[in-house]
Image 1 (cartoon, one colour):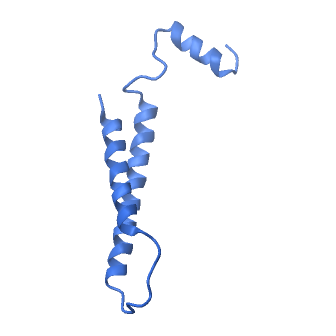
Image 2 (image 1 turned 180 degrees about the vertical axis):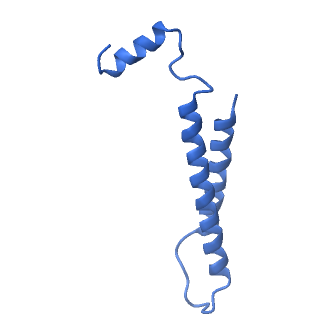
Image 3 (image 1 turned 90 degrees about the vertical axis):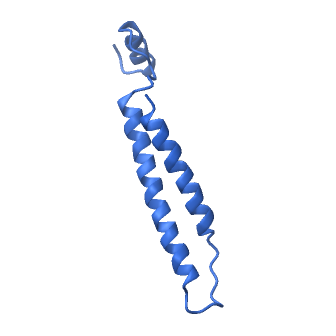
Length: 87
């Protein structure tokens, strides 16, 4: 067979297996990993935003856009979950 990727792809094609199947387990695991990481980031961003809203010293402002980070993380988590669960 060989160690080149092209050889592996050719051998998969000979077996009749698609190179990138819709239900490929490796893709599903990677997308679920991305979804979990994005969900954790969403939680961290929401906690940080809550801390910013409830800070004691109003003059001490932050520079991180926690609301935007939370929304982006939620969108990534939803799309990654949808791609992972797609039949």
